[in-house]
Image 1 (spheres, rainbow, N blue to C red):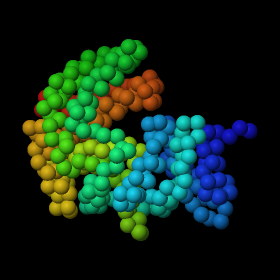
Image 2: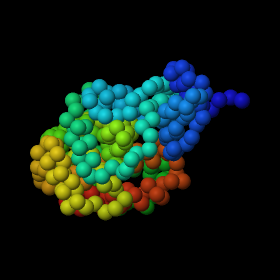
Image 3: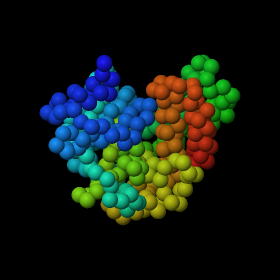
Image 4: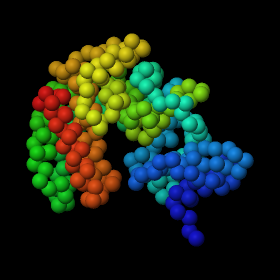
Length: 303
């Protein structure tokens, strides 16, 4: 029987570390990536993580993070098979508890103080203000493919944001500007017996660190600028850049961060819809999320 691509990738990796075939246990799997715990003969364990583009450079990001003093799981081996990245990572075990806001500010300060890695993509002021225009391009492609019909409201909202983007993006390069984790959530911060580690660096980039702070509380609930302001003040007290609290683009720091983080997420959702996942069956869910975020963005960025 022919090996599946994932099995072949794991075979390559276990040969790199000199191990026999392991027992596999799924931890989390979705259409573009997966995480498993593997147990080798003798009882040694590791985390097997695999991913398709655009998540196929996480091994590089993790190694860079380690080099720059950011606590991350060790990459024991990595390989690419048929365009899919596979990694064997240090198994950190079960967290002793869920990460809280105080854990998050400590981790964010360490992350944002790290020296910038030239290999990371850059989201500077110019790239930030281009996000709504990029989203409009994705929408145009979706409509030409006879998808995302009756979305004039989405186009109008993106047009409004695009027209205001040049002024609202001001301040993007104020400190903290550097490493951005981009998936900075409690599930990406492992609290173990030996301290904390940051996980999930697949979309790390160089950009405004405020986007990490805005992402911590998630996007499922309505944005809460007051809650974020308190979190940002805790960040500064813990040693984060004082300019984190400075006004940007004519807005409070918290409104700017929440608005642009959601705009970053909208562009990503729309790119997924047309490029990376490209499955019309899930369009209704994506459209609902984009509409909700755009309503928040218009209010937060005051456009």
